[in-house]
Image (cartoon, rainbow, N blue to C red):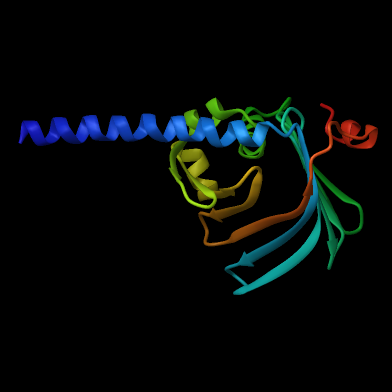
Amino acid sequence: MRKILLFLILFLAFTSLLAADQLEEVYSRISSHPVTKGELTQEQYIKMANRSLISKGTFVMASDNGVIFEIIDPFPSSLVVTPEKMVQTLPGDVVSVMDGKDNAMFSNIAKIIHSVFANDVQVLKDNFQVSVTGGPKDVVTLIPKDPLLSMLFQKITLAVGDSIDSVSIIETGGNWVNYTFFNKTFPEKLTEDERQRLAN
């Protein structure tokens, strides 16, 4: 029995180290593009209403700065995430700001969401159980370690080629959202407007 338990402990430790190495390799590909832009499709399922909504728009991912999601159809809205804050603009110019400077929990959430799309692998390893499945595209699965994060979502899954192709977020309450990124380009730097929107 002791030999079996020791084997299981060593196996789990090896698997964890292997996943960490694989995660480093995947995110080294992502971060090789300082800026990625393109179009996105967002499919959001609301359990209470038992319906899903498909939206279309554009995105900007800047590994050092954050992400900008602009939804164009059917209802204009935007989401800006930096390591310090999240700013959501809804129809009617309703703006919601989660600023980490005033709230440690908001700061942690913003930093984690930013890390999913950027290159701060250590934040992901500290906050998630990580598994990586290879194939035509690597599939990265992130399951929260922290009970507070577990109250927000159950799992985040990324499909990654030479950059992030899709992200799926399953929330604890049964809601989920899928982002698919396509028609991607890799400019060398942000525009001045994008830089200002992502400035802390």
